[in-house]
Each structure stands twice: as structure tokens, then as C-alpha cells.
Image (cartoon, rainbow, N blue to C red; front, top):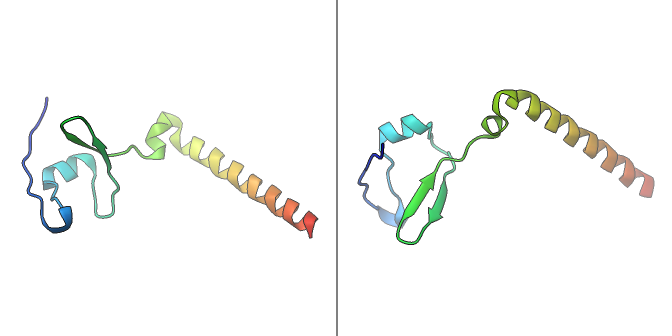
Length: 84
């Protein structure tokens, strides 16, 4: 079902997203939104967080990613020390 909202553009191009929409999509101050310019419209999208992109194993996938990044940092530090 498509819901329609009318918003006003304020100074510096700011718009106010209605409270019920912010609540429905978990938009809080500082949230980043994606703006898509289409032929004759603008589409605002709430990007999915990394956990939701990984599905049910989101926590595990993020932990594995963190471990890989830590290992790569150690390898890089070792390479840098070897050059000195």
C-alpha cells in the first residue's frame, strides 16, 4: 500500500519527515538516508544496516569481518616494521 505525505521545503532545502514515518523506519537525528533522483521524482531510502544485510547471522558475520580487519592490520604493521 502506498502512503502519501506532503512536506514543505524550508530554508537550505530542509524538509521535515513526519513523526510517524520516522518512527516506522527508525529514523533518528543523525540517520543517513539515500536520495535517488529518478526521471520525474525523488525517492528517499533508509539504507539497511550491515547486520540486516547479513540476515540471521549478522552478528557472526560482523565479528568475522572485525577479526579479518584486525589480522590485516597486524600484517600491515609487521610489513611496515620489516621495512624500517
